[in-house]
Image 1 (cartoon, rainbow, N blue to C red):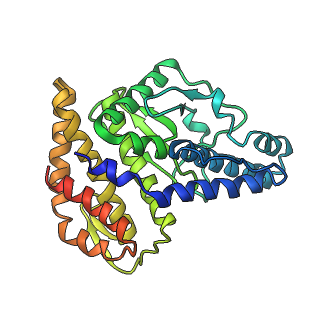
Image 2: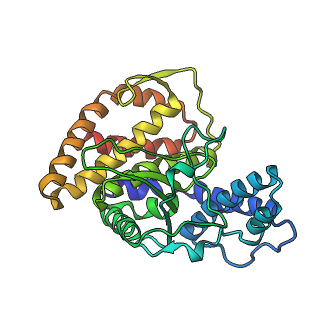
Image 3: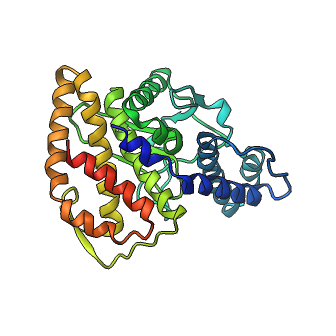
Length: 307
């Protein structure tokens, strides 16, 4: 039951968070003194890392547009004004936003729409903040507190859909620690999707932190995409979906009615899909040079296969 908790505590990621945040702040505020004293906690360092990327993205966009006022705002708010936007949760303060989807930018930095924290935030309705807080609590109770604390700092809620509808969610590498999610108004389901996307953020950071370069020459069959994928995408799927399987198996006994049926069907579907990856996953793991990272990916995949 402790495999995910063991997997998420990864010292190279914590070093990456602190080092990259310091470098970003040096770029945005070159004359400001760097913080001294004892290192921040991993959760605080992860939040700073996430918010620093929002500031960097917003400042770069403002600079390219010659928008001096907005650029100066980012320079004056290296935390993206997070304290005024925070929602208390079981894993620490989170930024929960529900922007107008028609105003989400699209650009070369992402294949999907995205959202960057800035000087003009839209207030998030209280019911959505409560939904998010309940989802974080549910995920934490199922053993995923460390993952959500460090890799789901900003939650962008997208469309409200019905249980059983296709729920879209994604992350983008330029905004680590940020998760974009549809939701069905149920914290148990939202927690599942938070864990899935936080898992992608974790693996991106782990690969960067260990300087792991994965060859894209070998292709592996992805049962989720129903096509051949390079090792990078295949390994991401074989990490994020098993995390949701482990989570679902843990919360399933506490659910009833339509939600129980929905999650039971989801787990059965994922068991079938994951079983087809067993041989290919072992071959794909051989492409990861870092032994510790390789073992963590194997442990989670193995636990999910045993469900």
